[in-house]
Amino acid sequence: MKTDIQIAQEATLQPITKVAEQLGVTEDDLELYGKYKAKFSQDLIKRVQNQPDGKLILVTAINPTPYGEGKTTISIGLSQALCKLGKKAVCTLREPSLGPCFGIKGGATGGGYAQIVPMEDINLHFTGDFHAIGAANNLLAAMLDNHIHQGNALGIDPRSITWKRCVDMNDRQLRSVVDGLGGKMNGVPREDGFDITVASEVMAVLCLSTSLSDLRERLGRIIVGYSYSGEPVTASDLHAQGAMTALLRDAIKPNLVQTLEGTPAFVHGGPFANIAHGCNSVMATELSLRLSDYTVTEAGFGADLGAEKFLDIKCRAASLVPDAVVIVATVRALKLHGGLDRSALVEENIEALGRGIPNLLRHVSNIKNVYGLPCVVAINRFPTDTDAEIDYIISRCRELGVNTKLSTVWADGGAGGEELAREVVRLCEREQGGFEYSYGLELGIADKVRTVVRRIYGGEDIDITPAASKQIARLEELGFGGLPVCIAKTQYSFSDDPKKLGAPEDFRITVKNVRVSAGAGFIVVLTGDIMTMPGLPKSPAAERIDINENGHIVGLF
Image 1 (spheres, rainbow, N blue to C red):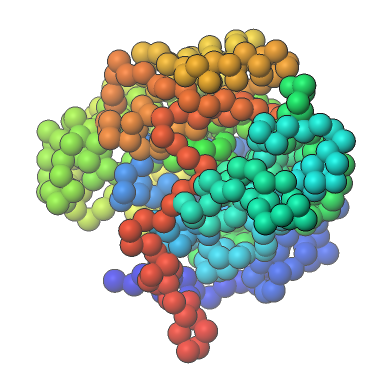
Image 2: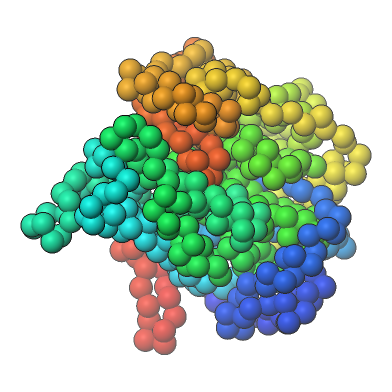
C-alpha cells in the first residue's frame, strides 16, 4: 500500500494559475510562490467583498482517538466530490503546525486520494505564515522587556506579565524558563515561558481579522501584562502594533493550493482547537464563500471543541451561518469509545459499538438541537467495518432524524464521496436551520463556561479555583465580561479527563486559569491539565522523516 506522501509525490499538479481560473481569478490577482502555491492579492479581496456568498459547510467530528477520524480527509474528499457533481466548490482548511508534524501526527494535509498538495511544502514551511506570526509575537515580547530595561515608563510589574514568547515546535523544555540573567546589560531577570505558535494570540488575531486595518487595531488591543497599579498594558501602549502588522502584511493574505483532483484549496491560519479557537481565517472563509458556490471548511478536533468555537466565536465575530454540518466518525473509533481494547478493533463487535455510539449521538444532538443546524453523519469507512456495524450506526442516527452516509474518499478520491456530497447539497438547498449560539454574551464569564459544560459537554457543573475566581472578577471589573469564552480542554473527552471516553455524565470541569485575549476578542479559560506548549511523544514522527539523495522528503505521513 502506498503511503500518503508517495501518492502525493506521484500526482501531476496543475499550475496554480490554472486552479485559480476555476474561480474566475487571473494571475494578476495572485502572488506566486513557485508553480503550485500562491497568495491572493489584497486588491482581489477588496474587489469581491460585496459579492453574494455561496453555501458554507462545516466539517467536524466525534472526540478524536489515537487512530484519527479522517476529518481533514473527508473535508478534502467532499470538496472533490462536489466538483464531480458539477458544483463550484472549494475546501478551506487550516495550515499544519510543525510541532505535531514532527511530533505525533506526521502531517495534516488529508490522506490517500483526498489530499491537498504540494503536501511536503504545506506540512513544513509553506508560505512562511507561521514564521511571520512567531516573529510578530516575539517582537512584542522583545519590545516589552526592552521597555522595562530602558526605565519602565509605563510602570509594568514584571510579576504580572502575561505575554509569552512562542516557537512553532513541540518543546516542553520551554514551558517555564528564567531569562534576563547574566547582569544588568542582559535585561531584567524574570520568570518567562513559551507557547507553541498556534496557541499565540497573534495567531487568533490573524485568523479573526477581516482586513489589514482590523488586524492592526486588534494587535494594538493585545494585553501584555499589568502595571504596578493593576491597569492593563497593551501592545498599543508599547507602540508595537505598527511593526507587528508590517511583519504580518503578507501572512494575512489567504493561500491557494489544490487537491489531488485539482479542486481549489484555501489553506490559511492554524490554531489548535484544544487550546485556541481552532478555525482557519475569517478572510479565507469569506473569500472562498464569494468565489465559490460551496465552501467546505473544518474545525479542529471534536464538535465539543472545534465546532463549538467555530459557531460561538468565529461565526459570532464574522456573522457566518453554516448551511450544513458534517460530523465524521469511524467504526473503530466508536468501538474504542466503547471500551474495546485496541487489539480487537478490527473484529465485529456491536456491543462495544453500542457503548461507544453515545459519543457520536451527543455531538449530533448538539449540532441539531442546541445550534439548530442541519447535519449529516459521515462514516469514514474502513475495509474491516462490517455491514452490521454500519447498519447499527445508521439506525441509531435515524432516531435523531439525521442521515448517515458512507465515505471512501481515502481510497477513491472524490468518487468515494459523491453520496455524501448529494446529501450535503440536499441539506443546503432544502433544509432550513434555526441557528442559535449555545450561550448569550450577556451572561457572566463563569455562567458562559457553565452553560457550555452543561449544554455541549453534558457535564454537571464547573469548579473554579480561587486563583481563577479572582481572575474572573478582575476581568469583569475591567469590562471584558461581555466577550465569548474560548475553553481550553482535552480533545479526547467531553470532560476534562482524557480517560473518560464515550459520553460521560455527572462530571465537573475544573477551571484553573482565566485570561483575556483582548485582541482576538475572547476570554481564554484553561481547564484540567491542558497546556499551551505540548511536548514530543516517546517516538516522535521526526525520527521517521528524512530526505533522500534526490532531495525528496520521505517518512512524512
